[in-house]
Every structure is written in C-alpha cells, then in structure tokens.
Length: 390
Ligand SMILES: Cc1cc2nc3c(=O)[nH]c(=O)nc-3n(C[C@H](O)[C@H](O)[C@H](O)COP(=O)(O)OP(=O)(O)OC[C@H]3O[C@@H](n4cnc5c(N)ncnc54)[C@H](O)[C@@H]3O)c2cc1C
Image (cartoon, rainbow, N blue to C red; front, side, top):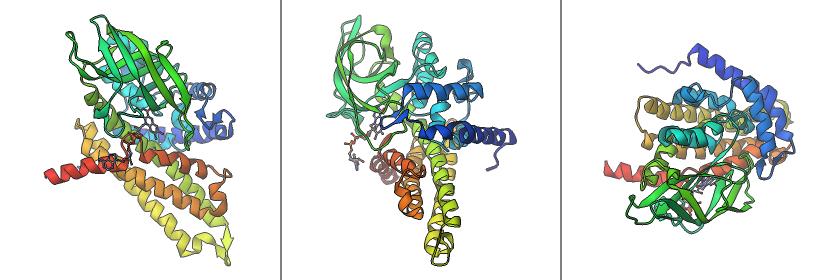
C-alpha cells in the first residue's frame, strides 16, 4: 500500500521543530555573527545549546550515539521544518557537511575512530570537514584526484591542495581524500583518512569569498604540507574512497533537498503575504494573474519536490541504495527550488533583492545548491547513461 500520511507523533515533532526555529532561531538571522563567511563558531555554539535544551540536537544520529536514529522519511519531514531558517539545521546539528560526515563515519569508522572523531561531532562540541575537491584535480570527476599519500608501513604522508572545503577553518574532525601510492602494505588508489584539524600539516591558506553564507566558517582553500598520520588514520579500507564517497553522497544530497525545501517554503510564505497586501493598479498584486501564476508555479514545484524527496527516502528506508532516484531528486529539486526562490524575489519587486526580507539571502544561498554534491549536469550525465543502457 502507498501511504502519504504523516504519523501523528512525527507531525507533532515537525510542528515542534518549526515552532522552535521560528521562535528561537529566526531572531538570530540578523546577528552580526552571521558573517559573509557564514555563521561564526561562537554563534553556532550558542544555537546548538538552544537546540540541546529542547532535545532537538542531532536527532538523526544512531541511537547508540545518543540520537533517535531517524529513518530517511522521518528526516525529510524534520529537516524540511528545520530548514525554515538556514540557521535551523546549524542549531540542530543536521547541516552540511557535518550531517553527511556523521552518516559516513557511523557506517565506516572503527570504534576508536567513533570515539575520537565522531562522538564529539554528534555531541555538537566540534565540527567536521570532507576534503575532496581540488583546484587542479578532483571536482565533478573525483577520479582526477591528485592529492597524494604515501605509506611506509607505519605512517602516511599526505601532500596536495584542496578548495571549496566547507567549514575548514576551525573544524577538528577532518575526512581527507587522497590517492595512496603503490606500496607493499596496502592497496593503492583513492583512500580516506581521518585527521585532527590541529595537525601542523593541515594549512588553511584562506577562506574563499562566495555568494552564500549559510555554512559555518564558509569554504576554505587548504594545503596538506607533509601531513603525517599514523596507520590508525585510515578510514575504512585503502583504495575504496570513491565507494565511500558514494555511500555518503546519496543520502547527503537528499538531505540538502529537504533543508532547502523548508527554506523555499519560507520564501514562498513571504511572497504570498506580500502579494496579499501590496497593491498596484487598483488591487492586491496577487489578484493580477501574472503574480498569482508565479505563486501557483511555486506551489506546484514545492509539492513535486516534496514527493520526489519522499520517494527516494522511501526506497532508501527499504534498504535500496536509490542512487538513480537520489540523482533525479538532487538535479530536479535544486533546479526547481532555485526557480521558486527567483519567482519570490520577483513577486517582492525591488525589495526582493534587498535584505528587508530573508528571501534575498535564501536566493543567494540556494544558488550553490545546484553545484555541490554533484552539479545538475553531472547528475543528468549519470541519469542519461543509465537511460541509454536501458
Ligand atoms: C558551496 C559549496 C560547498 C562545497 N563544499 C565542499 C566540501 O565541503 N568538500 C568538497 O570536497 N567539495 C566541496 N564543494 C565542491 C563541489 O563538490 C564541487 O564544486 C562540485 O563537485 C563540482 O566540481 P567543480 O567545482 O570542480 O566543477 P567542475 O568539475 O570543474 O565542473 C564545471 C562545470 O562542468 C560541468 N560538467 C562536468 N562534467 C560534466 C559532464 N559530464 N557533462 C556535462 N557537464 C559537466 C559541471 O556541471 C559544471 O557546470 C563545494 C562546492 C560549493 C559550491
């Protein structure tokens, strides 16, 4: 049976999350600690403590780590509510990149790594990064990975350069992708490593100036300068980084869809209110078909996006990888929600591009969503190949 009903307890929790975000988190959207490089660590910690007090911190984490072990469908409902403010997921510790990193570490890390690198992130005490993208190597095509690791039987030594690394400045738990060179001890190839952000071999060159500002500490350019790590730094099996990256990305790209759906709904609610109250040519602008059709297109898109997300979640909750469906969801939802945000700017007229409302920030922040965790074209490239294979 196909059932779209949200169970009463989940609906109640969704409403509680939405209330928490509106009452406690939205007021921080004008806090000066929400900078051009994202929320500062100080602001994040303050928000995290608010969520902790409401027992809304890291609810998605496995029960063994103190979370509630939410299913993917449950996450869809809760993250959409959290996404009403871009600071909601930061407060609840379900924002990128920590959310995806926690998921990956909960699947792949050994017990010692869980205690050292995962547990403090779940507890909201420290942040994490996933360092893959490179200026001259890995990007859409991670197989071009150029950061190099060698292994002498005792220690790894890593050298290379990465950029667009979200949250790099100040993060303690580092997941680093590097290409392990041929050696007599371990399989070669793309490999994941765990490191402490305080290691002297991790050099933050700078924080990039980008058009978004919803991720804590922004996005860094990073150099690994003879970063020496012990054998225990190996995350999972050597040579398997691309497989683990896929394991992380399928659910992680869906959770982006969930959070941005909440933000797009917020933008729509502001546009609707404006269309009801602002008048032009003798009536509220919402009564002009040109405006009401924009709001209707938004409503249709929001509904389609929600169903697309729920379907992929439903498959994953049944134990399927749903890579194809999560690719469809990521490409469709990111493109559609960006159009929703753009139409909201249009409905607001001139103030749409000002910070008089939060719509302008949502529009700018959402632009990047069409690029990270697989740009739309790369998902279409994968979908197209699957279609042609039949
Ligand atoms: C806000 C933000 C945060 C990010 N955070 C992180 C992070 O924390 N860690 C990390 O490792 N990376 C991060 N990234 C990087 C992100 O994963 C990459 O931007 C993404 O994988 C694309 O790679 P690229 O930027 O090198 O673009 P490129 O690979 O250079 O692609 C450029 C263009 O070519 C197109 N293209 C590529 N291949 C094809 C194809 N086969 N068919 C058609 N078109 C194609 C792409 O769609 C894109 O439009 C982040 C990016 C952004 C924008």
